[in-house]
Image (cartoon, rainbow, N blue to C red):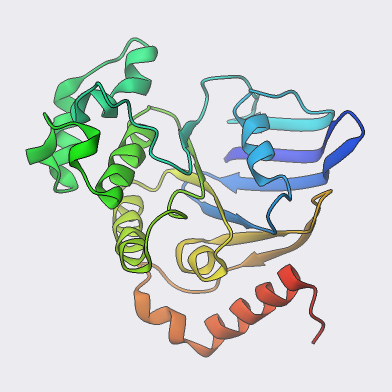
Length: 244
């Protein structure tokens, strides 16, 4: 069953064409990434999937139903935690909005990711990587089948980013929720994903869909595999328009 089906999607802001004839599919339990140049409409796509915007034409379905607000778990580029709420209360924000607030569940998940001692702390008391874990937990326990992650690690330093990749893969392997992940980082996309869609410059089209061939559970050493290096070069060429 498809968690997300996008067919023939087009979107414009007045005379500015942003997305053109986009087809994307995310199956249940699949991790899918989108890579593309800055300004190619990747964040606009998330706004359309989240029901914040209405597409100019084409269709978006989540679990075989037309898209509407409140049907995705969303993690933005910045953690966007509420500074006046404790960590455990930040984790349950999405469930609270839907009338399912459960601090016991929040504490259980904080324990699973090694943050139980920070349940009563406030966001400013946590590191950037820890705040991102909290933001991901907020999306994960939102009770939605599709998680949309919008460049969630772009503001982190290289070492913290690598740690977050391992952490995210471990959590995802244990839960296998459908994920649509936007990133500028090609290596990140290949390391995390089952499928990668490469977007062109605006108006964005899908220039290539790549099935990532590496087994799971996937470890950091895969980046040295010749096939991984070849795919990374292929995606880099697509992003830069370099012929080979």
